[in-house]
Image 1 (cartoon, rainbow, N blue to C red):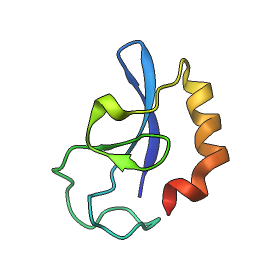
Image 2 (cartoon, rainbow, N blue to C red; image 1 turned 135 degrees about the horizontal axis):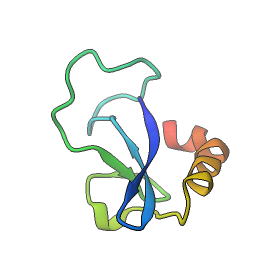
Image 3 (cartoon, helix red, strand yellow; image 1 turned 90 degrees about the vertical axis):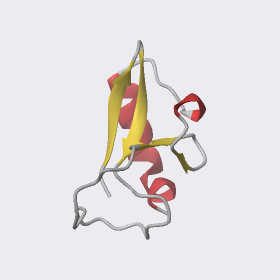
Amino acid sequence: MGILARKQGDEFVITSDRTSGEVPTNRPPKKLILDVYQIWTGQAWSTTMSEAKTFASLDTADDYVRANLRSMMA
């Protein structure tokens, strides 16, 4: 599962190529991902952009990912 911060308007959000219902893995997807990227809400992954946890800067988002990677991969 790829996790990265991306700019969304004036803020940054954390996104993943994880597909709903798919077991988390650290391997790249076996097939082309056609689904919408999921965003991190601070508690879980969602496809609803308005639920996204937002960050003021890329560095802040990256620091959050480093500190919370285990819960994000669960």
